[in-house]
Image (cartoon, rainbow, N blue to C red; front, side, top):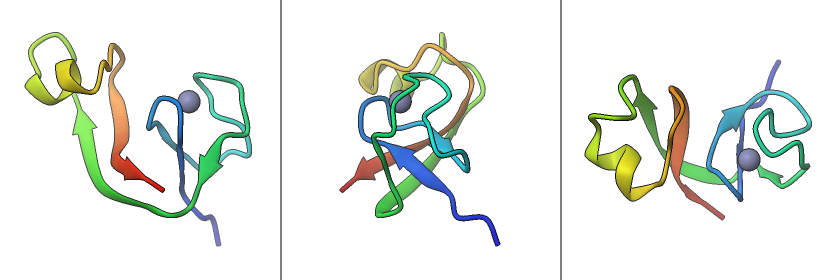
Length: 62
Ligand SMILES: [Zn+2]
């Protein structure tokens, strides 16, 4: 079973042990609110969260 984790730094959701974006192990399995960003340029959520790449992100990471 793979557990998804979210990065504290950039909120990226991953099943890896390191964040694919930050290359850090700042991951937590305690997160809530998953958003899928398809169009970072046109998405208000992406702007607020400072997301510049497509992907799945957690709204809140504890
Ligand atoms: Zn990250």
